[in-house]
Length: 424
Image 1: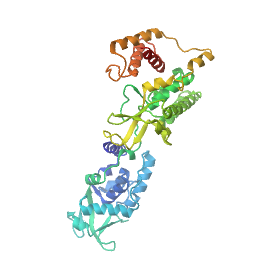
Image 2 (image 1 turned 45 degrees about the vertical axis):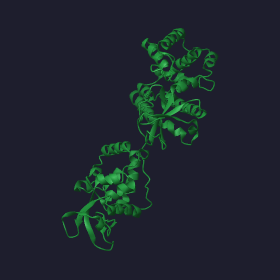
Image 3 (image 1 turned 45 degrees about the horizontal axis):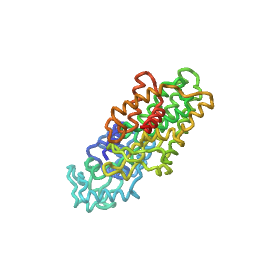
Image 4 (image 1 turned 180 degrees about the horizontal axis):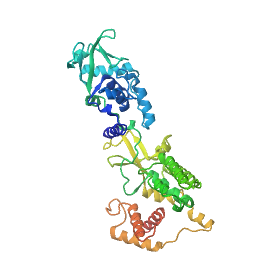
């Protein structure tokens, strides 16, 4: 709930929805909120000042039946997820609000007919009242639609409305634009795992010398601040920028790299479905639970590659239902990577066939360094606080050789580490 309230506040601030922050809402605003939970609709029906009611996008407060249209059009225009109304009709919305006033869940004040003094409308008063639309201004409150209006300028405390009819859970909000929690050691973000494979399988088109800085940053930030769902637009901007600066369109390698990445989404999905790769969900609490391989056979599984998130209803007891990040276990990744079913199973044969060979490094020196770490800290395992998994050992090797100016291929290091540990 807190997450959606934060998200709601971001929408209100970003779009300057001043009317949503009225301390007291008119009945039109109350009905609009209960039906749509949209701050846009509440803002449009505000009449707390002549300036607010006279804005170009304002609607008469007595016509909340436009609320669903306002909510839907603004959601579409601004890229926010619209919420389906839980009510079957506007009459049902009015009955729910009226019932809340009769029970005292909501408390309202107004000006009784013939008086200019504001007074509380009691629950007993509400027992004999009805609410109806009014094309000429505020909602009508009377004893019967055919009778004169009984109460004018009826207002309800905004905070009471939000308490009685709270914002929906975060499932109803748009998918997060950033990771729910940081990626911990020993794991890859789902999108990062895809990128690693693409760079290995199609290394000839992923050479950084062929890429602009903006394109490199766009891919390197995948799984953090950039996501695949935004990648097409980012790359279009890269192309447009190149054209503006040079007057020429770039070669087709930008499109080739995007196609390479998309191809490898399928590779990772198949490995997850087969159980060769281990995926986990990480909740906002930091708790992680394994995601069963069979869930990757669901119709919407490919959509998880859009941004690396999944909605979870049956979250563990310590985590509320909501969005969870999808992580790939690094150890399972390295084990699968060069296995018989992995994408690099025949990499050495391919290199020999085309007359090339993978870069040569002093792997004996790397092995010696790795085994010294094992001798010093112990074999990687859960009980080993320094090296709780093979991933930490591989990362120590990568960091050491990077400090020497040598960038070892991460999947290759992990493959060697796995083999060396088997020899112990």
